[in-house]
Image (cartoon, rainbow, N blue to C red; front, top):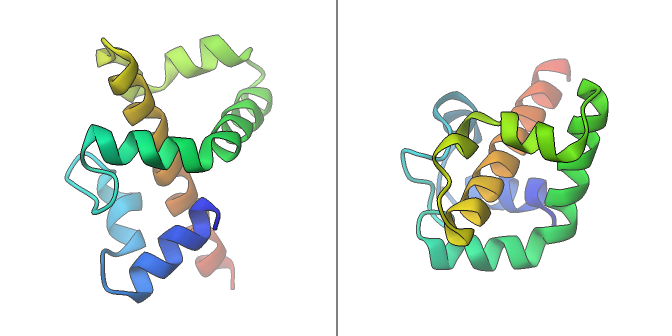
Length: 107
């Protein structure tokens, strides 16, 4: 199950609304990606997709990968590996939520 599938299934199961994630981000608490143990597990399950997404967005913005990651606002407060993984997961979930909303609006 990829991140978009996870988002859609969680919304279908009334866990959260994708629109809320796209509007408010993950920092307000999104079931399944709140605690570091959850985001670490989520990252492990979706690591390739997250890093492919980072690379794609870096390329699309004309930046190298590391400077792009450093430019992500949530990365400014990262002080540990757990915080880094958490920030990557939140960023990817938020990006995929925005993509789903854009797809819905285009349909």
